[in-house]
Image 1: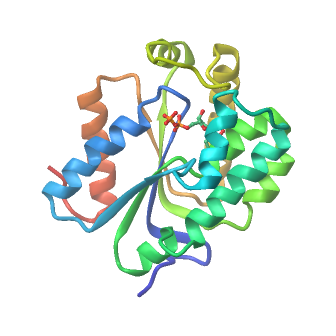
Image 2 (image 1 turned 180 degrees about the vertical axis):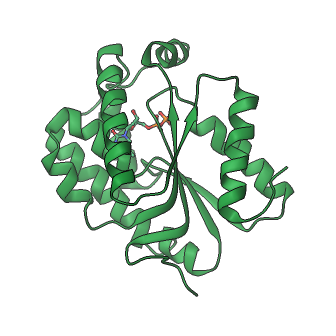
Length: 214
Ligand code: TYD
């Protein structure tokens, strides 16, 4: 089974990225319905994961455990390593010939931890990880996405407008840089209504999969 299309890119691994409230989780659920309808063999997953490493991160994000920003960068990288290389991890799912769709990956660390602990550490920690065959970046004005986030019951430590503006600007820079390095990144205007965003996501993913997605 040919999993890698270049020395470090995983063709059948697709990632959704964007600031909080950009709709990645909702869009991934909608895409999963379309993939099922079209009998695509796939799994969806997310970072931080549900594993103990990811749960520890969740406690920190809720403000229940204090952690140095550098520690958080290491934890996200630890969670990611296990997510990729663990027994039921991304690489083993890909080996079985399935597509994998993941809510957040390397670019989240470069954007969020790049702000909280500086660019160097997340860059180093994430440099060994393979890059996805396709990344969809859900771009939205942070003022708009914060309106959505503020409707939620509880807020996490990054969910403040000042932070979201910094993360948004960081994402824009990182996406340009990664594209220049050869990453396949598609941008979607996440301010459009949910159905229109879903349609665009299906077109992009359908074209990557080489099928029409209804
Ligand atoms: P999120 O996808 O927003 O989860 P949920 O919608 O279930 O709350 O992810 C939680 C937060 O984790 C989000 O603010 C982004 C942050 N995050 C990082 O800071 N670095 C990372 O590497 C990842 C994967 C997520």
